Image (cartoon, rainbow, N blue to C red; front, side, top):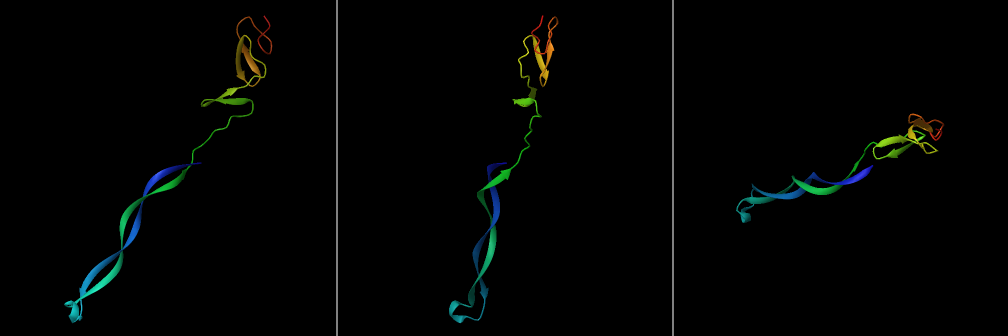
Length: 100
């Protein structure tokens, strides 16, 4: 998991003042009223994101985005094709391709 900063919207409450007709003669028959209204506002927040992470099988190691076979002994005249298994060049043999 990892966190990213995002801009998110939310309903921000505010006091809205309005006037109604009433019987208050001192205020010219207008009375003040309040109500809670909401407006869209924005804020920064942290969001947790997830990504898959592969894991190499036993006998393999991670190289970049790939899992590569691991040979305990270096393949002298060949290449490692699976864990502790060398594929020898023509004319070479043995477990590590060192026998000519």
